[in-house]
Image (cartoon, rainbow, N blue to C red):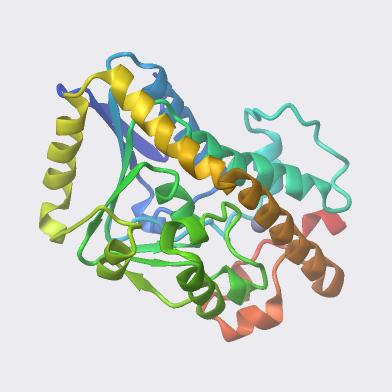
Length: 289
Ligand code: ZN
């Protein structure tokens, strides 16, 4: 088992692996390092024949603040990561390198996590923002505390939605548009009503409920669990989910490219001035140098 710095990993006697994001001081914001560790942890649990179900949890008050916009060295960090796609590093000019990076660590990781051959359960408390959705949506089941709330505010940064664009499948097309256009919060109860969340439980019962729920699933036959998961995924895929994700990812990069051409950075600073995130936290566009 690899050593993790940004998360904790534990396997229980009931054959449930729990991966816990452990950057509470940063509200579990995701930098490059955390995403690679999370991918490693998911794969480790997946390959461990003693593990039957995987819980993704988070330390602290909030599940995840999304991508860590304070990671100024993201380009170098990615170049030094154990990249899995086989793409070469380009010279850094143009939009290609950013597209490749986001294809791997955002869309690619999320699609891989959705297809892990074991049931996965997200255990969510507090705020789950933008990139945070990209951790919970690939999971098969979502258990939310009654204080959980979800938001994609990327349109207020001048892009068309998070890189793993599952909104229409998760909340329905009309609510998806409202979430994107307004960046308003989706509360746990409404997320439950819309089928995005399986159960809403009091915050102080979240961990116990999820652990018991996971153990119950882990008592079922592994082969049938795997097959049931793949069958439901296949139903969504037959409806065009994968093709829609790829199209949305291309539109996402159209907006990044537009912002680079107009503002010299991937996000729109004029939109950000109107939003709550400080532009001082933005990584400068190093590839222009
Ligand atoms: Zn992006």
